[in-house]
Image 1: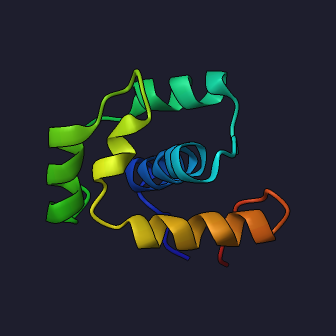
Image 2 (image 1 turned 90 degrees about the horizontal axis):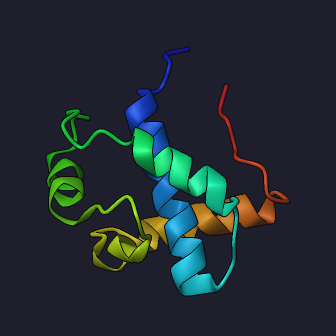
Length: 95
């Protein structure tokens, strides 16, 4: 099994948490966890997805989750949130 790039994983988890909070009025991680993960995001890391890399460089603000309102794939975030929510609050890990 290939390990997922930690930057990609963290950006996805953070974006889904921001989506949940901003659009679903749901907190799927604590404020402390959100803030800590936000500080670890490195917008200079190239993830191989030019569109999302550019989005994070232009819109990401670690002090807030409002940046998710400009996310280019809100439907994908919604789908990920629903999968997370339907699994009782546990992130799905493929094997």
